[in-house]
Image 1 (cartoon, helix red, strand yellow):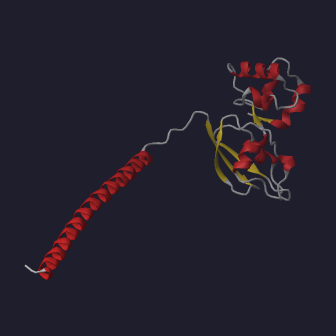
Image 2: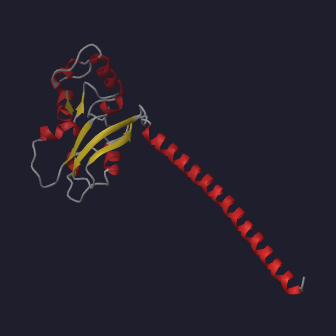
Length: 195
């Protein structure tokens, strides 16, 4: 056998070995890719499963509907005990047209409350603004809200809570049945409360 034939056989042999190596490499590369795809698919399945599970709401969360002179009116989620200023912040802040004199930024909010933030140029019925945004409900407000009423301190707030455990307030005047609240104190608070 001459040198030329040997070189031809060697060349063909190297080509065959190279082809086999390429085939083996591709085979393993495809298997690894499939494993990666399976991992991605399984992780996506897990994400979908997690999304399909009901989201647990904390008992500490409340939902408030806020509208009027805020940048993004609508439903906001807050922690229990949040104040009106917190709801306004969640709604993007106040517009430049707000009437700050008709709202109480320190008011503690309650779940399912509807808040309307009035415009400084609009004339509205104050009973509508009572609308759960600035007047304090003497039948449901906690001690932290009751003490925001003019003339009501910690002890009187406790008396109001104690009284309403046995008697529901059917008018704002009924609050005068609470020991320590007479006509003079009632006159101070009557524009800040509802029942």
